[in-house]
Image (tube, rainbow, N blue to C red):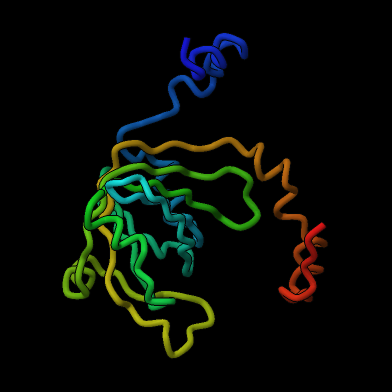
Length: 183
């Protein structure tokens, strides 16, 4: 018996609420969530399986909903390593977790991506809409995301981490990387 089959048998199968949550396109609530999200994590892998996870952010709605199967996400200037985009050269599949600060639920999107140049982003009305822009906050390129799967993800991990605890956030804003300690 495969590990996944054994685990499902031991734990009682897929949770009833999760059994039908994966959809092939955006529905009203997942679309609204993405339109209000200001942060996402993008996961990609090259053809050999070498992985990368990259944070993405901007003002709410930085990722534009084109239709029920298509999103466009801008790539705003950063470290210029372009690891994710290098992965897309050999493997167009990617996964995204969209977040709204303070909300425990997330939206997950899996699909195929295509790199877009600035002229195409202009056609879609996508701009570099970020808080606190600096001289490097320029629109470089973007991604067209063709949705294979989309669904809400339960809040348990955020609750386990107490991620949005305002006291912890305030305390951490005053810390530096040098203050982090390893036991």
